[in-house]
Image 1 (cartoon, one colour):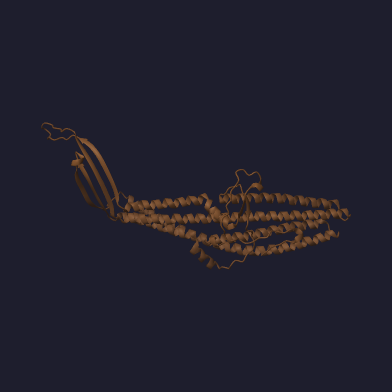
Image 2 (cartoon, rainbow, N blue to C red; image 1 turned 180 degrees about the vertical axis):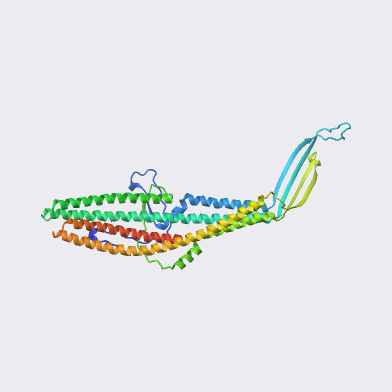
Length: 446
């Protein structure tokens, strides 16, 4: 939908929809830019801003490192199930006692001994270790899903900051239109005074209105510049750029969804739900690994080596054994760990219910907000049309001398308010679109 204010009042803000992503724009920033014009221009769509935030955000990078850490933990647990090989080499000098006590003591001269051995151990069967390895693999899945959740949260946050910047830009355009309008009304009041059809009070009142409009424009420009800085910060980019936002806001057609349909989409795509299910599985496997410590385990061990007083004369010796470990009693430590693990399983089940409720709340809230925002935009558009009509009529009455410019001033105020209402309505609508996409786990389809 294209919104256009009358040509007399200056072109108002035109909004276009949230667009699909394109490749990131790269630039080479000068070392010491002297003015804003010297800064390299960076043009960003909403999709590009969201992608840039994911690439540069330190929180996302931290979670990626946690994935690597979880993989290392899984590899460590796997190593417990694989053969372990070690070796030793040593040299010793000994004296031997060769007679019985009570007789003449006899001690040999020092003798040199050389020994080299290789040791091999293998866990043949340990249900507890197997479950620990499976739990570690589940931990990798949890870390990956947590990283995806953080990525989507970062994208949604950056998208909202982008929309706030668009709102600030729209406010600047609206305040600029107010200044243009007030200049025109001041000119009209001055001409009317020269013709003897208006008073100095009318001119002064018009000047006051113009200065007020200029003040509001300065405030809006400051808010716009700050919003762009916040957007750059959220993306983790250099501040030495001139940021240009290529997307705009407008009311677009959105396919209707019932609450049930929207919740089903969220259930299938929401990463938090998948991550929480994996946490439940991780807690269950951890409980199983501790419980299975009660089960006997079997380990094979062997060593082979050479020993002698001289290396050429060393003899080969070996030892092979199979050991079964049967847990009997450890002072109640194992039972304590089992109770602790059971508690963690119950905690994760409670968290799963909480996440499900939160997702349902976010989906319902986004649907309600979007429906309300569409109506707000329609009302705001109609209100702006009426305010512009009122302003035009009041100007005509003032021009022919049947009214003072107090009517014009009041009409100006209502036009400014109508513009703000429309901006807020469009912002709320597009923010709710972003919120619904986030709630349903479909940001990439926005």
